[in-house]
Image (cartoon, rainbow over the protein chains, first blue to last red):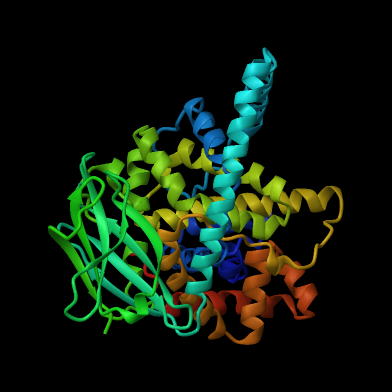
Length: 250
Length: 207
């Protein structure tokens, strides 16, 4: 293949739509063409944004499996620069064998007594209840976010962070998402408030102590004028003391 | 104050100033740097930020949840293993991660095709289950809207070429067959489609 032919593959390469030989040829070409490298990085960046469309909740056990696996996986030193690495030369086969051994050890441990089994059973049941609740909350959130009349308002928080209110009059509710950069101590909590006109603020939600990030579906928000977030002692207060953010829903 | 999918982009590409240490960071680039130093807590936070998209992307390409889980695990461990190889000059941390994820998914599809012909399951559009982290969902929705809007801005052939390759893992030769279009045309459509996407999304990589 000529250089022109190779270069014509830039889009296909960025989409991983080339075979191994073409990929190797293209990467060789990149080594001699620094402007191509920027081009291909940008096209890749654009291509990977297509992944924004593909969120899907992984099975909950995956997190523990991955965390356990990284605990046993040695990291590589920084690369000798020069070519586009995406780390495909991995010893995953060995890793998978180790995971299998780990799983076998777990099964053996579980087999040592009925008590262990009962505890596990209980945990599985609790997990599925939480999962069901999560799904329900999820469905409600999705319904609000999918509403055609969705309006998004946002305000920065004192000390960093952001409050976003996505509200739908049709759904009669809003998804309020809070992310505070301010450290919330173990004896402190963030509290959400709704305010209508000149009335007193009404507490909508108290976050768990120490929690800096959360999102809730709050009913009735489209009728209110302001959503506020304040920093309170753990458990919340009757009235806001230290207001960190106000989102005006006008 | 109204934000409709236009104000999020800077977070996506540039590192947020690190005010509170890598363990508190919510920016994948900052977290990935900490991961490169062997910080498992940072990896946990990074996992929470990206796992649903990594798994979702792989599942979209592979269609099979069990296989998707296996490949997603491999990819996430690979992110841990090769974190020090991430080069911020070449693009964002998320692009780096999803490049690994997409290539692994595509490799798996090709490996399967080599042994047996992949059975194409219909109804792929309905498999996406919602992600559990609602806080990210708000932002995610805005981003998705932007991607959809930008995809809509492509010509039909550009759009088909790009989505058949990216979401279904087809090679450009397969795409040419599927669309009954000459190979050079498909290559051009893929390139031009991505260029248009790049410009619409405002993607920029500083050389």
